[in-house]
Amino acid sequence: MSTDRPGVLVVGEALVDVVTPAASPTTEHVGGSPANVALGLARLGHPTGLVACLGNDARGAAVREHLARGGVELDARPIATTGTASARLDVHGAAEYAFDLAWAPGPIALPPGTGHVHTGSLAAALDPGAADVLRLLDEVLATGTVSFDPNVRPSITPDRTVVAERVAEVARRADVVKASAEDLAWLHPDRPEDAVVAELLDTGPWLVVVTDAGAGVRWWTAAAPDSPGTRAARDVDVLDTVGAGDSFMAGLVSGLLDAGLLGAPRGSAHRGIGADDTRIVTAIERGLATSAVTVSRAGAYAPVRTELS
Image (spheres, rainbow, N blue to C red):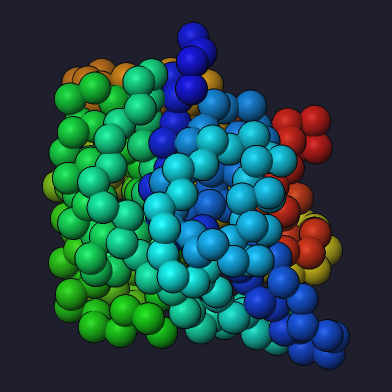
């Protein structure tokens, strides 16, 4: 990642989505939330690496080829079999997932030139690799920034208390947290969203973003926790929702990197930024644009900048 721009390292699962639509044959697409984010950032022009666990099998070869074609620099840690996420779609294109994968990356070194690290989903929740991720994030804090998407997967990590504790551990180390409204409702079923967001902002991140499917997106900053920003979702024909949240995450991080709000050590200046700051709004709009393209295509499609509007 030798470039004048800060490099991005994404850490987490790369796998194969086995997608079964409501009335169509089953297909396979390369996926995994962190892998989708890495591909999305690379396709948007950011030098991006990915640490993932892959088997030496046909699905692993498909993942490697897909990421290489998208410009992602892959650090593949060996496991017995490449993971899968079986996604069953309803008549509206919404997906329900079942997972079969292992997460054991071992020690992770920060590549030279890395200014930002993104992680989330099973990488932050699944043993034994979750501890490796925390150790890396502790190293990053002195030199760069961190973004985090909990993207909870109750089918493979069903213990709500354990997952909530691990999400909190990672969030304390993050500058930016993006979560879906569904994530927050599962993690904290008895608490209102604004209370959960306020607690997150008190513990570390300066920006918390909540995506809410067709209802759009809401975001809060540590400087103005009582004055959230809001944007409606783009009006597009939805083919399927596979990878939509990951695409939004890539667009959001891309916009914040371009604005200089990520990629350098956390500073006090971030604490004065309100939700209406033009740089944040522009990054949110990029996330909405990237996810709008993704849901209009089959699988976790990652757009390039010329496809955004």
